[in-house]
Length: 164
Ligand SMILES: [Zn+2]
Image (cartoon, rainbow, N blue to C red; front, side, top):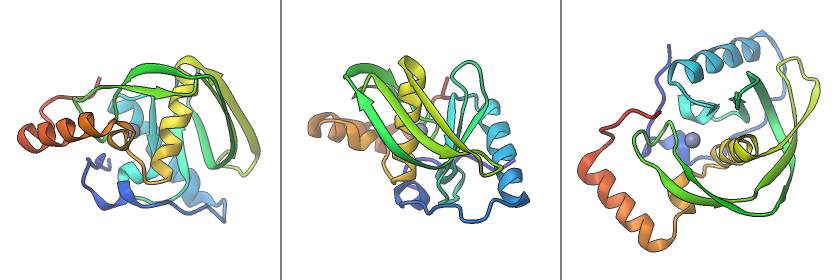
């Protein structure tokens, strides 16, 4: 099984590209991502987190797994602050402000158009994973002072904890 790459790995900072051909290799990649997400365990995993800069993420906020390929048309409403972690920053959690509700359109692994929408955990996961495809990590959502402290902590302690 592929390893989840951690903060500092180049693919996490790059913008990913759209999937253009929905062939068996995409299906295999999606299956592998779902397996890695559950093994972590996590509620979402984006392709850049296993070093692949394709616009794909998988998630399961309770009734999944689901896949979002080439997500677009993000719509958000409201705002809420929530303790949030990331499989690429294992052991760290921060209060992150995001929209309370999110919806987006995407394709499944067969190329069918799908819409995902929700609030609470699902709304948050959709926004978090979409950030990964844009090369954005949790740390960039922190305020300047918090970000400085987080970077310092990571440089001293690395990633001691396991993400739960
Ligand atoms: Zn993440």
